[in-house]
Image (cartoon, rainbow, N blue to C red; front, side):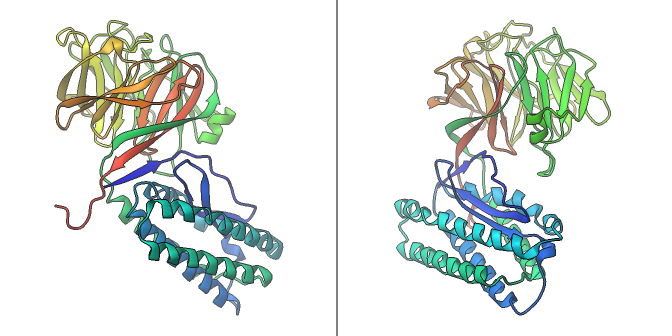
Length: 444
């Protein structure tokens, strides 16, 4: 059994001419290791490549040691996942710098050496959680050897064998993908943060990214207010969202109710104004692809969350698909969970809980389990969990920091493994800690 942590951290960029190769953080989110590499055009074959190959071999040995360690710990495995996105842009970045090779490499070799020094605090952390002293000792030796190699190369700037470096990157990428495939769904253990991304809009609203988009697609959608609006703003990247650079504006055919919308596989799903109808709107075609009434579902403040705002119907998604959370008279106003088909909006299966919808602050799905908070105000915590796999519930106590005192939207993003929230006119992200089971070749 292992615990994996998904952290949403702001990336610190390398100096000019360099690209992030990999990074890792400790359990508290502090950076403990970042490896960067120079651009492609700085690489050529010459007599100095022997020293580089020695460096690359050390890096590969170190990554292999880290992988073995991560498979034995509950905290370190999640850090490796960030490396996948960082490596994909490596080849393109290698082509960007054409001039001033020697000065750029001199500066960044020092950067690499400094990053290796930052690895040293990792040793006490590893020793705290690991029993394999021999492996930790080997890791220490790898760091010392790598630092020595970096020092030697800094004194005499060698040249990179780009082809060999790129092949090693591809091999590491394949290994990481293989490890990612062994992760099964996890149980929520902890919520940390939040990180404030932006302050904008009214007190109530929604913002989101598409959990099914590729890793290169980081578009953000923004829907201010909980009613009487049709305008959706799209931003190409999170940076554009922060700086307010709108790429497209959409005018929906129907107004929405609440703040519990979702973008899923390129389409927007939302509750149509003054109805229990769910609408599927395509951003690509600018048209409604489907709409369907949710049978018996209360709407227009019949069964909202504790803050009101016509938040009766909550559309959400997780690793297992698309869901809708609402309440009905037939279930005495208690929370109802339905799994729906994202194409037709047809209800596939329904679960009735005994938790009052009006007493729920917000809710979100992770791996087929619905988590409900007991309030939208200060002191809120995740209080109740209902598993659709076992049709059972439990009362839990997972606190989180309601920094701006009023949450009107809280949704889980399975791609980011984070909670997106609208907190009193602030767009924030919470990191989540999940308890994972690692599948092995012996598992059936």
